[in-house]
Image (cartoon, rainbow, N blue to C red; front, side, top):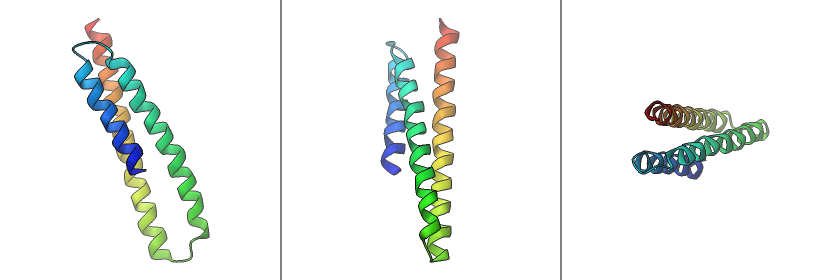
Length: 90
């Protein structure tokens, strides 16, 4: 999950850098797709928690997954804002 989040944030970075030269829309789309991959991984990981017996471990992992999901939502918000700015400029 952390690797997917890092890749999505890198895509945002590329979108911000490319906003002056063009091509920012593709990088913002890549960040949104990265969040979708993160959501699939997160759902699968949450489903696997049913088999874990240690409640402390379940609670810790669930909170970690929630935080990762929130970061992913923030990535999507920023990517959509970049896309909006591109449309507004043109």
